[in-house]
Length: 332
Image (cartoon, rainbow, N blue to C red; front, side, top):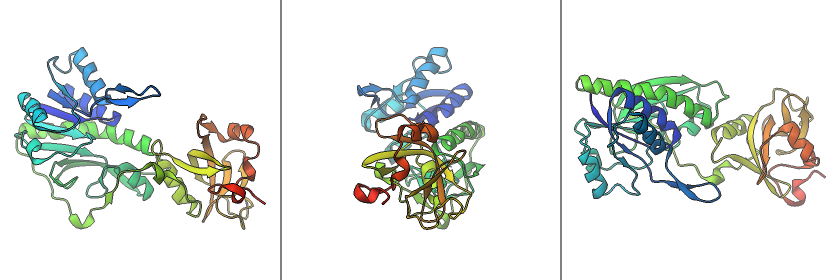
């Protein structure tokens, strides 16, 4: 049984930690330090740290197993890792870059689970990137960790077909569940002997950047299909939003409305105009190309509501033009 160091931080990494703990000997857990949470700002351990402590309590991980949660990967941290004598590192969404000194601590090297079909969507936000691009499929990849981000040899992949209804939250959860047994199987292969990977085709590599809060602002001149993809890709974070009547409006769920602009009264409406309400579909908004039906909305500081409840509390909403403030933000 291999001695494994697991590195990960968010909730999506927990299934991989749990699966590895039951298949191999996890001798150390590396995660990010506690982060402020809630209105009080009280530091809370990462989901991986919380899961590791639960696994220790139930005996799936040995009680003396260190949980290492440093601000930086420095010599002191590397010394603590070395004392655990890991054979290999298995990583999923740790959140920091590993340099050559850290990677040298593992005799069998390090493997990383990445939620995309590498070499497509290298980087820190591959799940939103696949949704934004309206890819027809994505997947999970186990790669041998290299110094250049997400460029290592591919050891295993599982494909995930996309139907255009996924959110970043639902797709990442699905990737986490599919990735856990793939990571365990990879460690099993290392236990049996040397593992060969397949070099990535650099000519096919695409990249995604870290998401920013401002990326969520909706441009109503874009097509309904593009805006729908943005809402799904940015749910739950950074969230898709627009200005409306001098306030900020978050849009959590929407879909492209099937009717033509003429059918819903949007033939000459400017993008962002509310052109009607479909009692089954939602609030209809004209875009640069097509009509978008808004299903779940939320004013800043208020709770999210279905479109019917939202309209009951915002009677003048159909008079607004989304994406505009002042006199331009209301219909003449």
